Image (cartoon, rainbow, N blue to C red; front, side):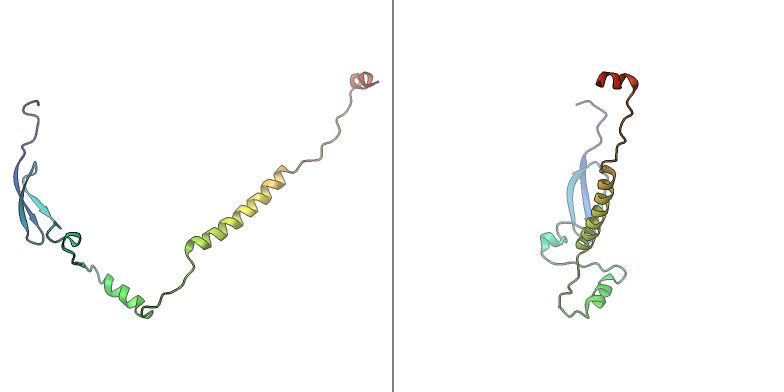
Length: 118
C-alpha cells in the first residue's frame, strides 16, 4: 500500500436516534443514525409508525366507510388495454388502406415495342 494517501481508519462511536450507542470503525469522525438494529421493525418485530402530517388519520377516515368490505373497481390496466386495442384497430385500418393495391394505368407502348411485338 502506498503511504500517506489513505484516510485514517479509527474506532468511532455510532449514535442512533433511539439512544442506542455502539462502537465500530470508520473513516468518518462521528456517525449519527436515524434507525439501527435495536429499533428497526425487521429486527425487533414491532411496528414503529411515524405519522407525518396526519396521513394515517386521513387514510383511516377515507376507508372507514367501507368497514372492511372490499371495494371492487376496474383496474386501470384493463381500461388502458381496451383503449390500446381500439387504437390498434384504427391503425390497422389506416395501414391496410395504405397497402391496398392502386389501380395501375397500362403502360404506353412505344413504337419500338410495337414493332418487337409484331
